[in-house]
Length: 354
Ligand SMILES: Nc1ncnc2c1ncn2[C@@H]1O[C@H](COP(=O)(O)OP(=O)(O)OP(=O)(O)O)[C@@H](O)[C@H]1O
Ligand SMILES: [Mg+2]
Image (spheres, rainbow, N blue to C red):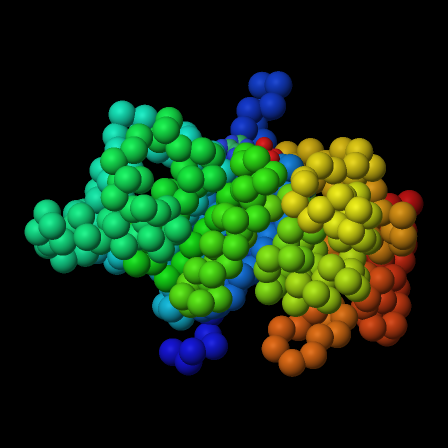
């Protein structure tokens, strides 16, 4: 494996949930055909509004649930069935950090207990003193110092930010290659968000972890991530270098997200909040045909209702390509072809409709 190959990759991953809808069976298309690659030392943000499938893709990558279709690859190798030694190894290599650090820590146990547990379960056998020393080193790594003092505390004695740091230390205990952080700061007080994000950034950039940062806040993704992938209604609609996607958004949905985000210059990058202009997300048990954004898109063309757009390149320099899944960016001849095809499909002689 070359150093610039992805550590973890999702290829055309879908995740559907069977549901009963007023007595009828149906499926929720939570994630459809998502391809995503995470690289060593790089932070990839997945941005989208509530219900767009962000947590679902994280759960699939963490293998908390299986994909309905598609493939995961770790270090270039397709992952097998969720059992046995290979599965346990995967769970060590890919760690998840959740939104609510209080829910993920047990109130009756000390910080030391939480971090020592994965050390004892994974990794080589260690003496009590060795485990203690490692717990202290991990606390220092997440800047909870003096570590001796923090090791003895219980979750309720910590602030939200400190609790999230404990969750991060616990995830680091098994020496993962990948951290999946699902809205890791959205439940924290605004004043401490930046500190936790800076810690995650250090783990990515300085310690070489591959980091997935899930957020509904595109402004924080721009500040924090190297690559931004925009998700809408279960599909990725745009992706590329963070600067390009946020400064020159190519998909009308990304533009809407940016226009609805708080202005970083006026209100501070991390103060969250969204304008109401985003409107209603579609019902994923019956997603719109063609491009899923077409019913809300101010620039929709006839083809958008008919055909799901593939990814079109919209530029990009060295490194990562900037792409958008939007017919506006189809090369002219391809747009014409799609429209001709659509006209043919609707012609009574070809459809049998008279
Ligand atoms: N177990 C489940 N059964 C049925 N539907 C589900 C299940 N889990 C998620 N969904 C649906 O899948 C879609 C995507 O949910 P998901 O939690 O991934 O969104 P999200 O982008 O993380 O949203 P948020 O920003 O609110 O966390 C939603 O429509 C949700 O209702
Ligand atoms: Mg979520």
